[in-house]
Length: 342
Image (cartoon, rainbow, N blue to C red; front, side, top):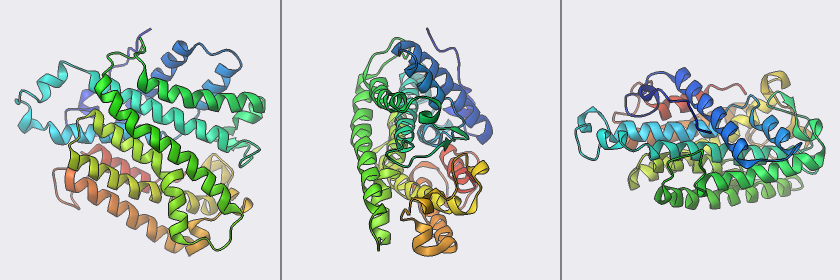
Protein backbone atom coordinates (compact mmCIF):
# COMPACT_ATOMS: atom_id res chain seq x y z
CA UNK A 1 0.00 0.00 0.00
CA UNK A 2 1.37 3.42 -0.92
CA UNK A 3 0.37 6.94 0.01
CA UNK A 4 -1.24 8.69 -2.94
CA UNK A 5 -1.45 12.18 -1.46
CA UNK A 6 1.01 14.61 -2.99
CA UNK A 7 1.45 17.90 -1.09
CA UNK A 8 1.20 21.23 -2.81
CA UNK A 9 4.86 22.10 -3.19
CA UNK A 10 4.09 25.82 -3.28
CA UNK A 11 2.70 25.59 0.24
CA UNK A 12 4.88 22.97 1.86
CA UNK A 13 8.40 23.21 0.59
CA UNK A 14 10.41 25.04 -1.97
CA UNK A 15 8.27 28.02 -2.92
CA UNK A 16 7.30 30.79 -0.48
CA UNK A 17 4.72 29.78 2.11
CA UNK A 18 1.55 31.83 1.54
CA UNK A 19 -1.51 30.14 3.05
CA UNK A 20 -1.73 29.02 6.67
CA UNK A 21 -5.14 27.37 6.32
CA UNK A 22 -4.11 25.37 3.25
CA UNK A 23 -0.81 24.40 4.85
CA UNK A 24 -2.59 23.06 7.94
CA UNK A 25 -5.09 21.21 5.75
CA UNK A 26 -2.27 19.59 3.78
CA UNK A 27 -0.44 18.49 6.92
CA UNK A 28 -3.63 17.04 8.43
CA UNK A 29 -4.48 15.23 5.20
CA UNK A 30 -0.99 13.75 4.88
CA UNK A 31 -0.92 12.71 8.55
CA UNK A 32 -4.34 11.04 8.30
CA UNK A 33 -3.20 8.98 5.33
CA UNK A 34 0.07 8.09 7.04
CA UNK A 35 -1.83 6.91 10.13
CA UNK A 36 -3.92 4.63 7.91
CA UNK A 37 -0.92 3.02 6.23
CA UNK A 38 0.90 2.65 9.56
CA UNK A 39 -1.97 0.75 11.14
CA UNK A 40 -2.26 -1.46 8.04
CA UNK A 41 1.45 -2.24 8.43
CA UNK A 42 1.26 -2.85 12.19
CA UNK A 43 -1.53 -5.49 12.00
CA UNK A 44 -2.82 -4.83 15.52
CA UNK A 45 -5.54 -7.10 16.94
CA UNK A 46 -8.96 -5.85 18.02
CA UNK A 47 -9.90 -4.04 20.16
CA UNK A 48 -6.37 -2.61 20.34
CA UNK A 49 -6.54 -1.37 16.74
CA UNK A 50 -9.94 0.20 17.37
CA UNK A 51 -8.64 2.06 20.41
CA UNK A 52 -5.56 3.29 18.54
CA UNK A 53 -7.64 4.54 15.63
CA UNK A 54 -10.04 6.21 18.03
CA UNK A 55 -7.39 8.28 19.80
CA UNK A 56 -5.30 9.02 16.70
CA UNK A 57 -8.15 10.27 14.51
CA UNK A 58 -9.85 12.62 16.98
CA UNK A 59 -10.00 16.36 16.38
CA UNK A 60 -6.69 17.29 17.94
CA UNK A 61 -4.89 20.55 17.13
CA UNK A 62 -1.89 18.62 15.67
CA UNK A 63 0.44 21.27 17.06
CA UNK A 64 3.49 19.00 17.10
CA UNK A 65 3.18 17.63 13.54
CA UNK A 66 2.52 21.18 12.38
CA UNK A 67 5.70 22.29 14.14
CA UNK A 68 7.65 19.56 12.32
CA UNK A 69 6.20 20.56 8.95
CA UNK A 70 6.55 24.30 9.59
CA UNK A 71 10.18 24.02 10.72
CA UNK A 72 10.83 21.90 7.64
CA UNK A 73 9.15 24.39 5.27
CA UNK A 74 10.75 27.47 6.81
CA UNK A 75 14.22 25.92 6.72
CA UNK A 76 13.84 24.89 3.08
CA UNK A 77 12.43 28.23 2.06
CA UNK A 78 15.28 30.04 3.80
CA UNK A 79 18.06 27.82 2.42
CA UNK A 80 16.70 27.26 -1.09
CA UNK A 81 15.31 30.63 -2.09
CA UNK A 82 14.94 31.75 -5.68
CA UNK A 83 18.49 33.12 -5.54
CA UNK A 84 19.96 29.66 -4.89
CA UNK A 85 17.76 27.53 -7.15
CA UNK A 86 20.48 27.21 -9.79
CA UNK A 87 22.98 25.92 -7.26
CA UNK A 88 23.92 22.28 -7.88
CA UNK A 89 23.05 21.52 -4.27
CA UNK A 90 19.80 23.47 -4.43
CA UNK A 91 16.31 22.89 -5.71
CA UNK A 92 17.07 20.67 -8.71
CA UNK A 93 19.00 18.19 -6.58
CA UNK A 94 16.27 18.17 -3.95
CA UNK A 95 13.54 17.49 -6.49
CA UNK A 96 15.41 14.39 -7.61
CA UNK A 97 15.32 12.91 -4.11
CA UNK A 98 12.22 13.16 -1.96
CA UNK A 99 13.70 11.28 1.01
CA UNK A 100 13.96 14.57 2.90
CA UNK A 101 10.21 15.13 2.72
CA UNK A 102 9.42 11.48 3.45
CA UNK A 103 11.60 11.60 6.55
CA UNK A 104 9.72 14.74 7.57
CA UNK A 105 6.48 12.76 7.25
CA UNK A 106 7.94 10.09 9.51
CA UNK A 107 8.98 12.71 12.05
CA UNK A 108 5.53 14.34 12.06
CA UNK A 109 3.86 10.98 12.56
CA UNK A 110 6.29 9.97 15.31
CA UNK A 111 5.71 13.08 17.42
CA UNK A 112 1.93 12.74 17.12
CA UNK A 113 2.07 9.05 18.08
CA UNK A 114 4.19 9.83 21.13
CA UNK A 115 2.06 12.80 22.13
CA UNK A 116 -1.17 10.81 21.82
CA UNK A 117 0.24 7.95 23.87
CA UNK A 118 1.03 10.47 26.62
CA UNK A 119 -2.53 11.80 26.53
CA UNK A 120 -4.06 8.31 26.74
CA UNK A 121 -1.97 7.49 29.80
CA UNK A 122 -2.45 10.95 31.31
CA UNK A 123 -6.24 10.45 31.21
CA UNK A 124 -6.19 7.08 33.00
CA UNK A 125 -7.77 6.78 36.48
CA UNK A 126 -4.32 6.32 38.02
CA UNK A 127 -3.26 9.71 36.62
CA UNK A 128 -5.69 12.58 36.01
CA UNK A 129 -8.78 10.37 35.65
CA UNK A 130 -10.29 12.52 32.90
CA UNK A 131 -13.35 11.50 30.92
CA UNK A 132 -13.12 13.92 28.00
CA UNK A 133 -10.29 14.56 25.54
CA UNK A 134 -10.33 16.30 22.14
CA UNK A 135 -14.10 16.72 22.43
CA UNK A 136 -14.85 13.02 22.89
CA UNK A 137 -14.87 10.47 25.74
CA UNK A 138 -11.40 9.33 26.71
CA UNK A 139 -10.06 5.93 25.63
CA UNK A 140 -10.55 4.21 28.99
CA UNK A 141 -14.20 5.31 29.00
CA UNK A 142 -14.94 3.95 25.52
CA UNK A 143 -12.75 0.85 25.86
CA UNK A 144 -11.67 -1.09 28.90
CA UNK A 145 -8.93 0.50 30.96
CA UNK A 146 -6.56 -2.34 30.06
CA UNK A 147 -7.12 -1.70 26.35
CA UNK A 148 -6.48 2.02 26.78
CA UNK A 149 -3.26 1.24 28.64
CA UNK A 150 -2.08 -1.09 25.86
CA UNK A 151 -3.09 1.43 23.19
CA UNK A 152 -0.78 3.97 24.80
CA UNK A 153 1.98 1.38 25.01
CA UNK A 154 1.79 0.43 21.34
CA UNK A 155 1.54 4.03 20.13
CA UNK A 156 4.78 4.74 21.98
CA UNK A 157 6.57 1.80 20.38
CA UNK A 158 5.22 2.67 16.93
CA UNK A 159 6.61 6.19 17.29
CA UNK A 160 10.11 4.74 17.45
CA UNK A 161 9.44 2.12 14.80
CA UNK A 162 8.38 4.80 12.33
CA UNK A 163 11.78 6.47 12.70
CA UNK A 164 13.93 3.36 12.73
CA UNK A 165 12.56 0.81 10.26
CA UNK A 166 12.55 0.59 6.48
CA UNK A 167 8.78 0.21 6.38
CA UNK A 168 7.62 -0.58 2.82
CA UNK A 169 4.82 1.98 2.96
CA UNK A 170 7.17 4.82 3.89
CA UNK A 171 9.83 4.99 1.23
CA UNK A 172 12.48 6.12 0.57
CA UNK A 173 14.24 5.71 3.88
CA UNK A 174 17.32 7.78 4.68
CA UNK A 175 19.33 6.04 7.39
CA UNK A 176 21.64 9.02 7.93
CA UNK A 177 18.73 11.37 8.65
CA UNK A 178 16.97 8.66 10.66
CA UNK A 179 19.91 8.33 13.04
CA UNK A 180 19.88 12.09 13.64
CA UNK A 181 16.12 12.09 14.23
CA UNK A 182 16.40 9.19 16.66
CA UNK A 183 19.14 10.98 18.61
CA UNK A 184 16.86 14.00 18.98
CA UNK A 185 13.64 12.09 19.66
CA UNK A 186 14.62 9.43 22.19
CA UNK A 187 16.03 11.61 25.00
CA UNK A 188 13.16 14.06 24.68
CA UNK A 189 10.65 11.22 24.95
CA UNK A 190 12.36 10.28 28.21
CA UNK A 191 12.26 13.90 29.38
CA UNK A 192 8.52 14.07 28.67
CA UNK A 193 7.90 11.13 31.01
CA UNK A 194 10.21 12.60 33.66
CA UNK A 195 8.27 15.85 33.43
CA UNK A 196 5.01 14.01 34.03
CA UNK A 197 6.48 12.45 37.17
CA UNK A 198 7.66 15.85 38.38
CA UNK A 199 4.18 17.21 37.72
CA UNK A 200 2.59 14.45 39.79
CA UNK A 201 5.10 15.04 42.58
CA UNK A 202 4.26 18.75 42.57
CA UNK A 203 0.57 18.05 43.28
CA UNK A 204 1.47 17.20 46.85
CA UNK A 205 3.93 20.08 47.23
CA UNK A 206 3.23 23.59 48.44
CA UNK A 207 5.20 26.70 47.63
CA UNK A 208 6.25 25.77 44.08
CA UNK A 209 8.35 28.58 42.59
CA UNK A 210 8.26 29.80 39.00
CA UNK A 211 11.64 28.19 38.32
CA UNK A 212 10.34 24.87 39.70
CA UNK A 213 7.27 25.12 37.48
CA UNK A 214 9.36 25.92 34.43
CA UNK A 215 11.64 22.96 35.12
CA UNK A 216 8.59 20.68 35.10
CA UNK A 217 7.17 22.06 31.88
CA UNK A 218 10.44 22.29 29.97
CA UNK A 219 10.28 18.50 30.12
CA UNK A 220 6.59 17.60 30.30
CA UNK A 221 5.43 19.94 27.53
CA UNK A 222 8.54 21.51 26.06
CA UNK A 223 10.64 18.43 25.32
CA UNK A 224 8.41 17.09 22.55
CA UNK A 225 7.88 20.56 21.07
CA UNK A 226 11.66 20.91 20.99
CA UNK A 227 11.95 17.51 19.28
CA UNK A 228 9.32 18.44 16.69
CA UNK A 229 11.03 21.65 15.60
CA UNK A 230 14.52 20.19 15.56
CA UNK A 231 13.41 17.13 13.61
CA UNK A 232 11.68 19.26 10.99
CA UNK A 233 14.80 21.37 10.60
CA UNK A 234 17.09 18.34 10.36
CA UNK A 235 14.97 16.86 7.56
CA UNK A 236 15.42 20.13 5.65
CA UNK A 237 19.18 20.27 6.17
CA UNK A 238 19.28 22.92 8.88
CA UNK A 239 22.70 24.39 9.60
CA UNK A 240 24.15 24.42 13.12
CA UNK A 241 23.05 28.04 13.75
CA UNK A 242 19.59 27.22 12.41
CA UNK A 243 19.30 24.22 14.72
CA UNK A 244 20.30 26.42 17.65
CA UNK A 245 17.62 28.95 16.65
CA UNK A 246 14.99 26.20 16.33
CA UNK A 247 15.90 24.83 19.75
CA UNK A 248 15.85 28.28 21.33
CA UNK A 249 12.47 29.04 19.76
CA UNK A 250 11.08 25.68 20.87
CA UNK A 251 12.14 26.25 24.47
CA UNK A 252 10.23 29.53 24.55
CA UNK A 253 7.20 28.18 22.68
CA UNK A 254 7.05 25.07 24.86
CA UNK A 255 6.76 27.16 28.02
CA UNK A 256 4.37 29.61 26.39
CA UNK A 257 2.11 26.74 25.31
CA UNK A 258 1.88 25.47 28.88
CA UNK A 259 1.20 28.95 30.27
CA UNK A 260 -1.60 29.28 27.70
CA UNK A 261 -3.04 25.93 28.76
CA UNK A 262 -3.13 27.09 32.37
CA UNK A 263 -4.90 30.31 31.35
CA UNK A 264 -7.43 28.55 29.12
CA UNK A 265 -8.21 26.07 31.91
CA UNK A 266 -9.71 28.89 33.97
CA UNK A 267 -11.05 31.18 31.21
CA UNK A 268 -12.62 28.78 28.67
CA UNK A 269 -15.52 26.33 28.81
CA UNK A 270 -15.31 22.56 28.62
CA UNK A 271 -17.14 22.59 25.27
CA UNK A 272 -14.62 25.01 23.78
CA UNK A 273 -11.58 23.22 25.20
CA UNK A 274 -12.70 19.71 24.28
CA UNK A 275 -11.54 18.56 27.73
CA UNK A 276 -12.71 19.31 31.28
CA UNK A 277 -12.21 22.98 32.17
CA UNK A 278 -11.03 23.64 35.72
CA UNK A 279 -9.27 20.29 35.97
CA UNK A 280 -6.06 21.89 37.25
CA UNK A 281 -7.86 23.37 40.23
CA UNK A 282 -9.71 20.10 40.82
CA UNK A 283 -6.39 18.25 41.02
CA UNK A 284 -4.77 21.10 42.98
CA UNK A 285 -2.03 21.39 40.37
CA UNK A 286 0.63 24.05 40.46
CA UNK A 287 -0.04 26.43 37.55
CA UNK A 288 1.19 29.76 36.25
CA UNK A 289 -2.27 31.23 36.89
CA UNK A 290 -2.16 30.15 40.51
CA UNK A 291 1.38 31.51 40.82
CA UNK A 292 0.98 34.89 39.10
CA UNK A 293 -2.68 35.44 38.17
CA UNK A 294 -4.32 35.50 34.73
CA UNK A 295 -3.12 38.96 33.67
CA UNK A 296 0.52 38.41 34.53
CA UNK A 297 0.44 34.88 33.08
CA UNK A 298 -0.88 36.32 29.82
CA UNK A 299 1.92 38.90 29.72
CA UNK A 300 4.46 36.17 30.42
CA UNK A 301 3.10 33.99 27.59
CA UNK A 302 3.30 36.97 25.22
CA UNK A 303 6.93 37.61 26.15
CA UNK A 304 7.79 33.95 25.57
CA UNK A 305 6.16 33.96 22.14
CA UNK A 306 8.05 37.17 21.30
CA UNK A 307 11.36 35.55 22.28
CA UNK A 308 10.51 32.52 20.15
CA UNK A 309 9.76 34.71 17.13
CA UNK A 310 13.02 36.59 17.56
CA UNK A 311 15.05 33.38 17.27
CA UNK A 312 13.34 32.47 13.99
CA UNK A 313 13.68 35.96 12.55
CA UNK A 314 17.39 35.80 13.31
CA UNK A 315 18.20 32.60 11.37
CA UNK A 316 15.19 31.38 9.38
CA UNK A 317 13.15 34.27 8.03
CA UNK A 318 15.45 36.23 5.75
CA UNK A 319 14.06 39.53 7.04
CA UNK A 320 13.93 41.85 10.00
CA UNK A 321 12.06 41.39 13.26
CA UNK A 322 8.61 42.95 12.97
CA UNK A 323 8.19 42.33 9.23
CA UNK A 324 5.17 40.48 7.87
CA UNK A 325 5.10 36.77 8.83
CA UNK A 326 2.59 35.48 6.29
CA UNK A 327 5.12 33.86 3.95
CA UNK A 328 7.02 31.99 6.67
CA UNK A 329 5.36 28.78 7.83
CA UNK A 330 6.93 28.72 11.28
CA UNK A 331 6.29 32.38 12.10
CA UNK A 332 2.71 32.01 10.87
CA UNK A 333 2.24 28.95 13.10
CA UNK A 334 3.55 30.87 16.12
CA UNK A 335 0.96 33.58 15.42
CA UNK A 336 -1.73 30.90 15.18
CA UNK A 337 -0.62 29.34 18.48
CA UNK A 338 -0.72 32.70 20.24
CA UNK A 339 -4.32 33.25 19.13
CA UNK A 340 -5.61 29.75 19.96
CA UNK A 341 -8.65 29.33 22.18
CA UNK A 342 -8.31 25.64 23.03
